[in-house]
Image 1: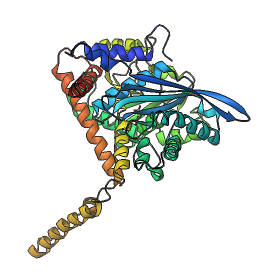
Image 2: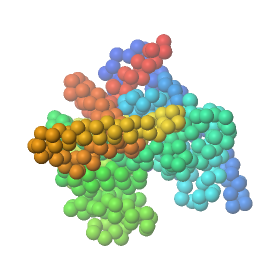
Image 3: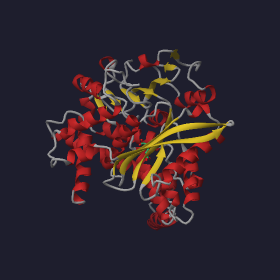
Image 4: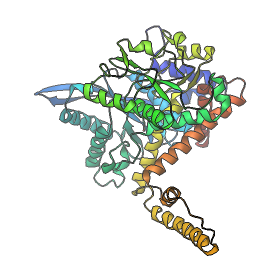
Length: 476
Ligand code: GLU
């Protein structure tokens, strides 16, 4: 994906790291210790399918073990390679540090086109891959906890969890060996939507500070903003859906594998999603113009560009032509180091991946805690909270009747106030809080330091400082 004249994805991440670390005062040697990837395990395994042995290549990379377990998804894609997995593992380290999820960074990948296999075949392949990783402690609730990524989802996580449980029959915490599981297999409400929801919360926090909005040359709130989304997978779909349905943003463009849809009045994201599921592509969707040259739509006029698919889509080849004043990186590494520089010089504001897509791992953290505590969030407090609220309502109504002021509470207020929070509400609240606090920590550095010109550098400074502190606490 990244053009040949540019550094690889991992080199790109390292360049951005180096750019930030040059502004810090780390003890000699620690900088390199943080930057390098600790280990990458490559596995080649055979699975008998359709009467023949097929050999697959998979990776699990551990970037930093300053905190354990290490955390990060498993990607299924044909383009998976060691360089990519290591870059993604490094991003996981910085991401977890930035949002204070108590994990080191890791990532896995299997070189496979999942669309070429049926469900039963995928299960056999996934179980075998999980077996290879689990027997080396590269899946383990205390050491390494995978999650979904591109090409994987709840189904694969359920197979992995079950495979681990079969291999560790007396491990009471077996379910915490992987996150992103379906609800009925130890998952948590709100994990599927989490990364897209996090993008929404990130943009809301961005628009809370007019100084930031002005830096991007924009005005006002999210309402009415023109948004182009690249990739309507799990992340892009949820981000676009929530932004349009809840914040009044207008999704003017959606770019997919088979081209792009464009409608200046705004696309119905749910309808496009349904169309995509049914037809396998966006072409033919009514109420929009379709252009086969999807990449060109990245360069269209809009207020916010959301790359939510692959790495390297904004590169030296197109960066100068990108018109969006604000880019939020819902994908990992969508902007190459070279493009990052061009955009920074142009004044484009980029909300960086390690922050923008951290919603996924944040809710993964909640799921892991839920699995270790063996209880659903809210189970103990919900009714007690409702009962206490009922006391207040009863008292207010008694007061109103006793004093004869004839004051009544609106039924809508009563209903909202009386309802105790369920797991989904608690998860969203925890995610919102996490995204706000992490953004504020970046914003502070961005505004306060004259030598920090962009949010990405600010994000690196905050996260590297946290990683460095935990290394120091370990005596390194
Ligand atoms: N694959 C996701 C990411 O890149 C989620 C990782 C996780 O939940 O551990 O952040």
